[in-house]
Amino acid sequence: MKTEETFVPGLKGVVACETGISLLDTEREKINIRGHDLIDLSQGKTYADMVYLLLEGSLPDDREREKLEKKLKAHYDIPENVMEVLEMLPENMHAMDGQRTAISVLAGYDDKIDDRSISVNKERAYELLGQLPAITVNSYRILNGKAPVKPDPELSYSANFLYMITGKEPTDFQSKIFDSSLLLYSEHEMPNSTFTSRVIASTNSDMYGALSGAVASLKGNLHGGANEAVMRMLKETDSVSGFEQLMKTKLEKKEKIMGFGHRVYMNRMDPRALVMKESLKQLCDMKGDTTLLEMCEAGEHIMKEEKGLYPNLDYYAAPVYWMLGVPIPLYTPIFFSSRAAGLCAHIIEQHDNNRLFRPRVKYTGKELE
Ligand code: COA
Image (cartoon, rainbow, N blue to C red; front, side):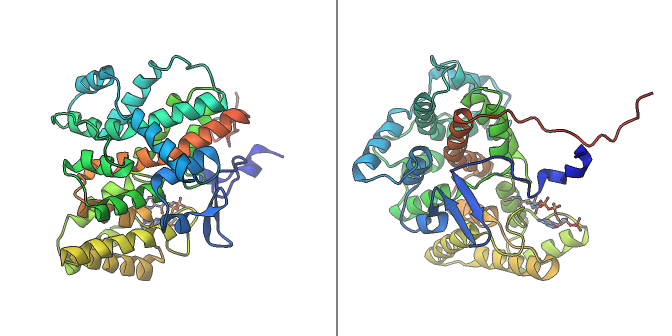
């Protein structure tokens, strides 16, 4: 078969690899994570449970959960040199760039760097996941001229993460909503960043390199960067009518509206967005001001009517983070931090059953002379 006959722009619908980690099951309209539906998991399980499920293959029992939380906490602190490198970066770089740089630096502290065995890779993943809240928050803080903050090991993983972000110990309600956003973001089959990490891992490159590539992929606004873009768009106005007008103007100018559309969920709403929409409703009700929810709903209505497009997770995660007091430049780094659980599972799987990715091209250049 000639290579151009198999060319699919953007690899839409192309099956890139075998995996036992997750599947967007479009027939049953479920997000299958190792045999569990992600939306069901979001109704009672925690992000830490997801980490265990992704890395160990099953949900933890109480003893395993306790052990996991201790393990993550044992890795909360990051080497002082990583902080020093962050201090040396030019101010106002995006926190994603800080995150990417810090992950690269951590490679230098791994004395088993050339060991790709499942057991070593898993321990490496737990260590990185423990370190990510401090890396994420301090990348943002240092790059914005703020003093770094230390994790609080007395708090749960998500409560500590949110505490480091806002500087205030969150209520159980706030922690639960933040935790649920992390759970929903943690794994989603084969988006660009996961593909990127597997492509890098397929050369036998290490987990730090594969994750650094994934940060760069996730930064783009067609992928993870959409959540920040959504909030910036919502902040352009403070009324429902103003937002409706803004969306209509953007559509007239043929601009893409961030937070809408998805390569896989084409004719329905991303089920994860529905969970976050409910969280937004609860947060707005608690505040006694539902304007932000009404603005989002108005935007959702316009996009359905005008373009037949539905919200993705980023559309509702953004206003939820806003209501939780998260600075906008941290939205995508938080997404990455959470997704790192799924990415590590994919990197481990790729290393364990590897075939080098090396596709072909449809050549559009000059013919040979
Ligand atoms: N706003 C306006 N129009 C959109 C749109 C959006 N958010 N998403 C898709 N479209 C339109 C495109 O302009 C295109 O129209 P055309 O055929 O008239 O040119 C058509 O729908 C197909 O879009 P395309 O970008 O080719 O689809 P895709 O499957 O490659 O892309 C996304 C999927 C997610 C990249 C795309 O929907 C998008 O850019 N969304 C906004 C960014 C976003 O929210 N990303 C997070 C994804 S989880």
